[in-house]
Length: 425
Image (cartoon, rainbow, N blue to C red):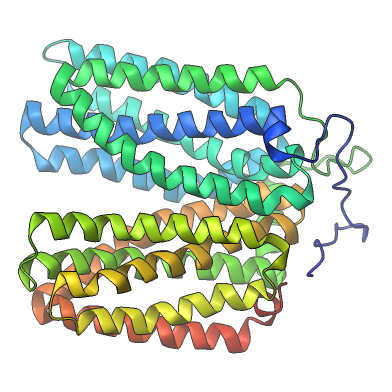
């Protein structure tokens, strides 16, 4: 198995847990609290997003104003992802998470009050939304990098798999619950519920107490400035072949996968004329395939050999699946292939997130995850814009097939040249 990256002093980072660690993931109080906090925080994010967007549409009827809210989140993620990762590596990650949750609780509560009051300038909502988005961007790499502090190395596969399964379930249910809450109680009440989820998330993190050990914080090293640490993060990603491969592959997979699935939805309506029931099944296939893939990864754990080959191989296989879907005559016939795509997507992303926690220096994980977060937040919207424009000109089937061919070619090139990723075991 690929070892952990070396520290600058040449010694391998000490990842042995101190007293308080347990052999069972579900007996690890810190993991349960952090996992529950993450789930509540994510529920708050999705709930807030749909509730605020629906409120904007209901009160203004303006898709342009709704797009301002969406673009605000995108720009904040793109601009500050790397800065957030550096902050996560310079400070106590647990403290950073609960502080940002408290900040979001206060700000989202303020948004709920403004939404309730009449004739409030929309710019106030946008400003508060930008600060909420910034706090969320700060929290994400802190959470991603904190796992190595609270679980044993042998538990990483199970922990990442469980988190990814929860991620899919919560994103789907959060959007649904947010829509229901807005319809039943109005935007202000729905957003207030969202604020409470952030408060509960912070409370869970406070419940954990101090993490059993800190991830490679060498007190003997000379103190560095924020700018130096930021540059060191970029330099690490650029010079470490595995980090560089992960930072390239994840945004590429997100770019093609999400953009192509959007075109499959267009094809289901405009070409296949799918009935609502079949369209609903199609929508469920991706998360279902992803969950099945994550469960299988958890079950296989260390028995899954050649994990780097699985990462790139699943990306390669998605290419022919997309080409085959573009040739289908009906949405119903395409369902098994769409399910398989969701399964492959799980293998191409879940295993990378496992590998990152094993192969990356823990003191650099915040910066690596921050950069990945920034790139993966930009890739899907860019892909959606490009693919939708081309689809209007050439039709969805042609662009889906071209996307599949591109994934196949890029995957093969990655297999040939990304040796460190391919050899990861």
